Length: 451
Ligand code: PNW
Image 1 (cartoon, rainbow, N blue to C red):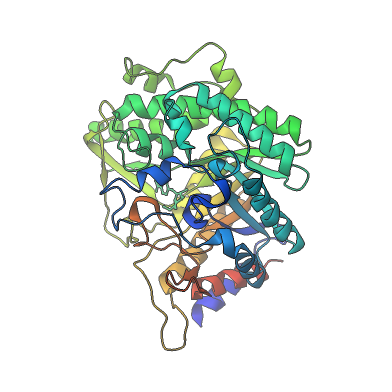
Image 2: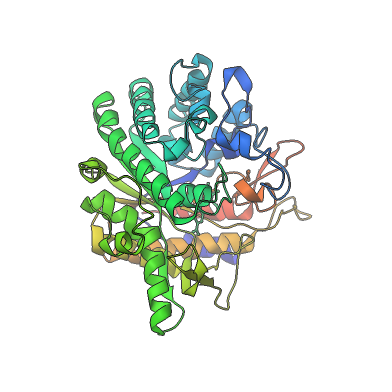
């Protein structure tokens, strides 16, 4: 097959890390098993209309029970690494106070199983599923939540730090803060506009900054980073109002987080624009946030072409869809985005190392062809083209060290439910049977072709 041949023609270095990524709520199921507490996603999915197909992660891929099968899949694909997240309410049902030993034991089994299989665990502490008990106290609007996450980080690092070396504090503060608190598309479903997005973001960044030294103290030798979802932003035209709108979007999605984490400040232009909508930013907060990091994780799915519009006033942008191919969640397929974001981050912030912590595409639900295989040719090409663009940036000297496919197995895609699978492995939701797709076979070839 031509795609397999194209995969074999990529030659990343031998020590380049290839992995698969997932998140607890999207795959585990077992939403109330063995003493797990309720999370904001458990609550949100029960709200009529919140998830387009009316589903939830109650069962998802039943990874809570089938984790051994999933490790076997990773072994078959030859993955070096596995990026997963801990469901906070599984290990500590209320997000503070009593721990849940059975929940802790689940991740012990998973981590020990990965290590026995020779797969390196990359652990994310927070991938969107805040314990509902903390939401009841204000969630990310409550500054105290930052301290609760830092405590959680330390507890996890004490427990798993002897076996887990790679730690991520937050997954995508932009998305969980803004989609959760400004537009309301994600849990907890609040629609408080810019004020909501910025308040949640400041507290989330504070949580990150407080957590980093706690992880290092509890797990000496740990490599610690944060995962940001960044976008390559372009104005739709050279009209001044479009250039301004693109700038506002870039400040809000990229620079707010990057400047805080790497430079210990928020962009002045954004603070001026959003005066009156700002959270309580206290003396010392930005110094706390700007911890030295071992790596930056970047999730990149598309570029963003922006024009003047009415979204999130006073940011006032609108997304433009240039002609081209689009995925099932409406993202433009634009492979240079990965090269462009890597060179942008390297040029302006120079992290020690960069990981592409997520990259991948959604389709409509798929079914196997006569030969039993799902021929997801577009997804296979997506991986080949994006990894080639990553390699182009690497060859220019960008220190990109790892790439994680989003996602290992078809799973619960948040507000899209099960309507837009992203997996390189198909999951039959009736039988829970896993079957690698053509994209998985191509990915394996890319891994094998390293030299
Ligand atoms: C990520 N964008 O979110 C999440 O980390 C995953 O949990 C999720 O399943 C995956 O993407 C697929 O949607 C995104 O701006 C955040 O293009 C932002 C963007 C894309 C995905």
